[in-house]
Image (cartoon, rainbow, N blue to C red):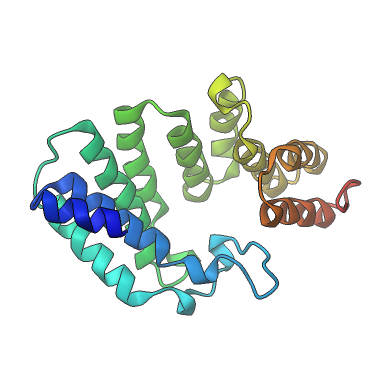
Amino acid sequence: MRLARLVVSLLPGDPGAEALLALLLLQDSRRAARLDAAGQLVLLEDQDRDRWDRAMIAEGLRWLARATSRRPTTAAAAAYVLQAAVAAEHARAPRWADTDWAAIVAHYDRLAALTRSPVVELNRAVAVSFADGPAAALPLLDRLADDPRLARSHRLHAARADVRRRLGRTAEAAGLYRRALALAPTAPERAHLRRRLAELGAPGAVG
């Protein structure tokens, strides 16, 4: 954020710089709520939103408003604006149930067309799963399974597992959670995946 503020000061009025600062502020505003007292991962839907930094959110929204008041001049700047817009939708929602998933999908539609990024497509599919239900997201996620750029992505396997869990396809979900567990890079993420396996009553949930 210090570097982003420096860029804003060097490029006054640049929507890409302003949107990048907005994105960093909005993302970092949730930092205190991402782990519990034991260091375990807390999903966005379960986070205590009273622990979000409201001053940081307010500043992030102000920078985003400035960025969106002018047309971005580069694809990179436009991408930062759209990423910050997604973060803003989460920041504005007082509860998980109030999240405007349709707006988030719309932002990802534009971002996917702009970047052609499989990571963006993955995030878009997850948003679709909450906007339109897990069945709608299932083919979108499975289509990404053969993309070599996501071959080592534990998040893809976890997302494919999550939609199957929500659809009651327990055995398939367990297999994909195990694949995600083998690739997860951090202890909190591995612990979260083991808890998911345990919830499914699946072998391999501990250790």
